[in-house]
Image (spheres, one colour):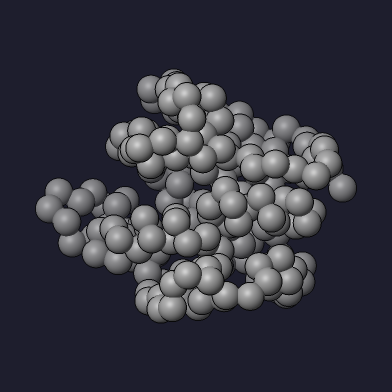
Length: 188
């Protein structure tokens, strides 16, 4: 069975996207944090996206390695992003590119099917999609990268849950700028 990981950059008050500015609140990550994210992405065999985050990622990373001043890590991230298989869950878009498959039906059923297979871990990206997977008991690990900023509203990292999810702390790590990674695994 494949492991399912939910990880994103989060504000101190728990939002992944701020009202009016989206994910732009975090600014450019430190080289060390960017490398950490690259390592996580390279260890993944499949990324599952909700529509909004797919649109943000697909508007930048397909050609991110061709931007003036792109660092070696950014070049590698763009290449890895294009090469990694992706599934986008949406009923409002009708076409995807870049090694991606579109699923308009039951996300939980498809994630359950994908998780039951063999292979490298899967990453889930987007709070709404991840919320459905969390409520279904499908998420194994959480990687919360907390930035020292308060935005006061927007899209929360955790959407409403039906019941408690008990976790074990796996790791904490501090990055430049006071950014803190906290990794948890679901108690089973």
